[in-house]
Amino acid sequence: MHRTYKDRGLTVLAIDMKEPKETVAAWVRKSGVTFDVLLDPTDSAARAYQVSVTPTVFLIGRDGTLLAKAIGTKRWMGPRGRALFDAMLAK
Image 1: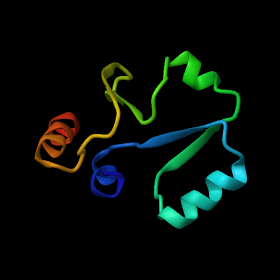
Image 2: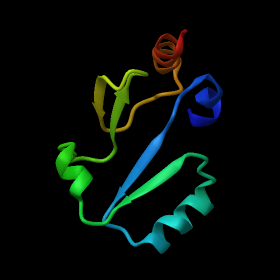
Image 3: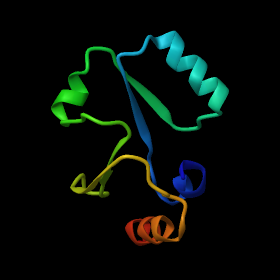
């Protein structure tokens, strides 16, 4: 998703909860992740955003408004996901 939409303005941030920096860095290298991964070693971000299940995805508009929250895995690159991102990123 990041690779497909980054040039149209999509920013993807992942937040890893409680895992050591070395573990996260190894996963990023192995997975070929191209977006930023932030660390939340104390779960403060998870508590602030009321994340109890992973993955939890927040879609935030260009103006900073929360547009949607999705819990669990989704087919973001399927037809419905692509249509959603195409609409969100339309100028």
